[in-house]
Figure 1 (cartoon, rainbow, N blue to C red):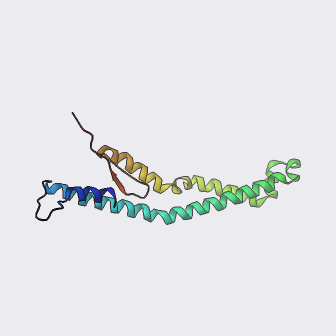
Figure 2: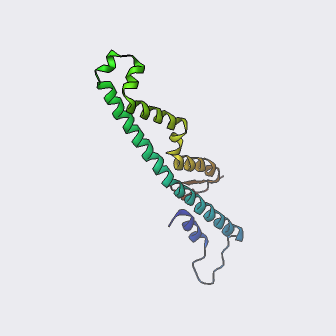
Figure 3: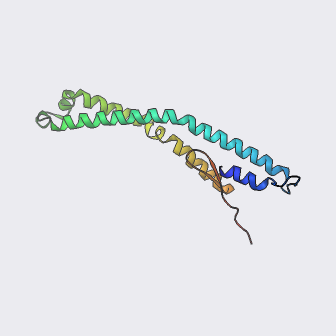
Length: 148
């Protein structure tokens, strides 16, 4: 049971025939909060497959670049020829390095952490309403501060 369901359970009368002293507006707010939570979790869940693909692509290109760099560095010819010639002699490293740089210019560093960015921004906004959310988008209700 998430925090919204717990809050609703506290606000819903448990005795048969009991009347809730909570105004009807509160239950409308809970419906709104549940709808917001469903939409947020749905959006973050929909981002997961694309994020996973971007992460796999980044891992593959990074491993290719590291392997090409290792082969480029251990080649004895690399020290004897000019920089551009050594890059020309190692096309695997050159292509994978250019691909990695291109991916970073395309914003892959943001795409691999997109759900975390969305959740962090939501936490910032929800903090004003004494709420937060976890990384999956589930809302967390915080106790109201007591003003004296």
